[in-house]
Image 1 (spheres, rainbow, N blue to C red):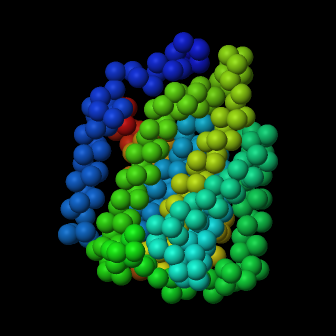
Image 2 (cartoon, rainbow, N blue to C red):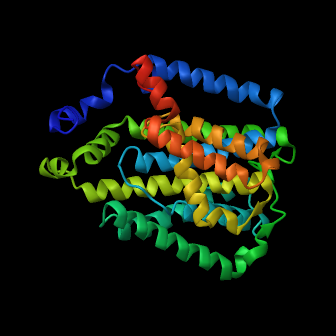
Length: 329
């Protein structure tokens, strides 16, 4: 860790011989495979299923930015995901704005939440940080139960998809799919850029040895707060996009169980890897979709997978593959 926690190494580490757009060769291959799957996906799979997968993949990537690269375990990310959906739904349905404006509004509100909640939570660490984020998220849940604009237990229904930039209608699943895929790729590439920037290298240094980073003159609380805000904002983007896809925003998305799901997705895919959260989201969403007829047994199976990953595959799917190939993914 000495190479990442010295003043001379933190910045150059962001330029460690990377190829195009900061991707290593294995990462670039993985990115091309991901792009090919996004293009070919709707020809082989149900577009709505793929859109749900992409929304949760972006949500998991946003969560991984905080836990995987800063080392902060949040149990309250459902607050930003769900509030992003409520705000986007309200802006699109009641105010009549276009979908990109609705998603942006959800992201802004989620980011403001992240600013306030992060300012409160980052003053603590470990289990205390996790419990504070959970408590704050539960406050948002009960707020959504009572707030008039959320519709209470009925939620916001019949949210219109609208037209992208006021010209391209998104009523069909195909056109909506390309809108969602575009948002996912922008969010994914943004997260990659953050991780491999000098700022991202400082985050890794804080994760590995915060006292050392402080001794080098870095104001670690400021770095962590910015990371918290970015993670919350991107989670809001994912939640707002999901609300437009399904035309509904409900209490399910702000419930604490949703925070647990995104933790599971990230751990299964690979904590602290770029592509891990995407793979983890694909595994969990696919299980929920194709094993739905098994009812409550889906949760039992997910629990078994979680236990297996913790005990035998602690790096997650992508982490284990990267370790075997001796590459960084």
